[in-house]
Length: 412
Ligand code: ADP
Ligand code: MG
Image (cartoon, rainbow, N blue to C red; front, side, top):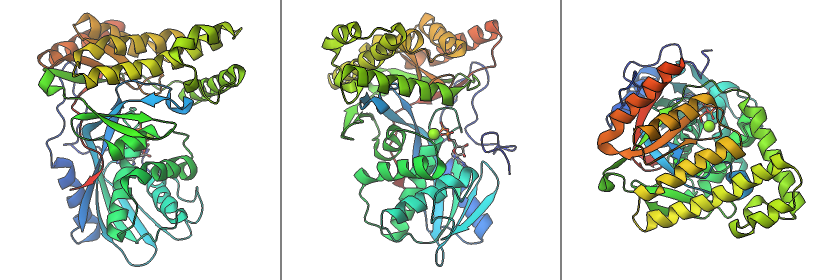
């Protein structure tokens, strides 16, 4: 099978990252949906019954706060995954993906227990498994998947795939599963069936985001609030910079940060670091005797507060003013949580030097993407500046996407 992270023949019209200095606009609406529909017809010899889309996402602010029961503020990207689907007889599911170029079939045996479908199709089988586990009668189905969300860049192609498949199966089967219950189910598919330990943010964003808004999510209660985030009205844009840094030891480092946070919460006698208020931070730090642990705690506590501050500014319509919070978040990830790498630090520095109001790494760290808040008419210039600085440092050329807050999963 083709390595799903490195498909050998990506479609020519996919939203390929732009070449040096050029900002890639999102693929025109309809393209990816057309590709899913055409792929379906070609593979299965009949038209699909419908098409369902779900977006990739970036996290505006709130990094490594999710597993500390804290706050995050993602928004959905115009880049999306589309599933064209139709019912099939019995307990039989077949899925084809344009990005991997292969077709995988599975039946009731394979979705009876986690792990029986390997590779990329596990994300699909996992959704079927999780639905059945929750007592739903899942219809057999044929599915064709096309996507503009780059795989493995930290824009959450995995949750986009899960969310689009889930929306398709719920509609095809007429299942009673309101939107509030879907993120948890998709997360279960990824955690328990695929075996990837993620929080609830990615699936919540892919399912619950609204156009023109960021999603303020309390990871403890799973309560969400849609916060107006109208970049265009403010003459602003969010430039997403794919750092193209190879993910170095990301899994092990993630696990060690998580363990450090849990240990610190135990030492401080709280259920999670979310329970340390910013006002009590100094007291809490004084009770820890290890400098590294103190810095980890300081990142999480200050980051939660930055999310709350960003939400307050956005509620007041002060979009530009969140810039310094983004930059402070980056410094905290770099100095206290120690999860950045030279490529992302370079992208942040170059974007700020070129006039960005704020910039930060987004995602778990050790590579992935950077986002920069810029004047809309300066996006190209900022992208050029980042590309130039990258070349000076001998890094692989970065990729760029312009992000406007898009809607969550829906039927087309
Ligand atoms: P991210 O979610 O940040 O893109 P992950 O490693 O969590 O990175 O998920 C990427 C994986 O999800 C891919 O390697 C592949 O297995 C699967 N995947 C996502 N989208 C697709 C797609 N359109 N077609 C096939 N597999 C996909
Ligand atoms: Mg993912």
